[in-house]
Image 1 (cartoon, helix red, strand yellow):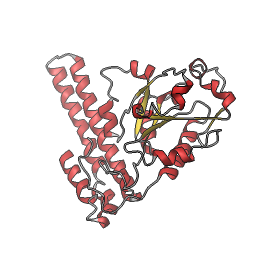
Image 2 (cartoon, rainbow, N blue to C red):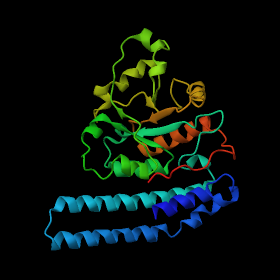
Image 3 (tube, rainbow, N blue to C red):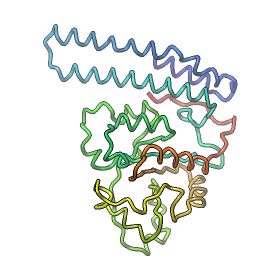
Image 4 (cartoon, rainbow, N blue to C red):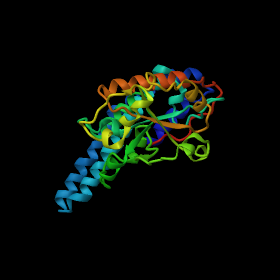
Length: 284
């Protein structure tokens, strides 16, 4: 089934067949019905687990694998429908970046949801549905992930997401170092945020940020602060393989992140030429 799905994506996403892209959704319309039947494996595993009186842990692990497989199929069905509806070739797995631009990869940081009643699965699904391409794991969240967790990097990949970094604070107190370009070759990922004024920079001190009772005075959405991101984002859009993350510590987390990524995309968008390369391997 995975092989057939990959062939369908290859055919409909081939730039040599531009009219086929709109039919991608119809080509995979039966996928939810087919993937649902994969849960029959769980019933078979349960039968052998009980009849053979085997340990529960291996049975539970196999059930997790079945769930991850079905989640992957659901994700690819959603992705196919989205590609067909928008005709956005940038959404195609393995799509090369546009000529003259990098197609900046944007992630969100899980620290934004540290006081929310939402798990990693919910964060990842929301990120996927709102145009994010990765999940930046806050260090404490990463440390508390079980090695047997089903919502791991493989599951993330099935949602079209990556985990570009595990984040924590690295104190840099040398202003001359920060003003120079010496750090540039060592920067692999940008973390974007803004503040209402330089005098409010202390609001991002870890002791304040991590505290549920900490002040949020001075925290503003990305394009409403003292720093003008226009020139910086224009430069990032030309940087090969550029990656960045967004976070928000105030109220209305979902609305603020949704607005910020939409504006980032609008300011870094480049046209994808029809002659761009075909789909590589479908992430499953």
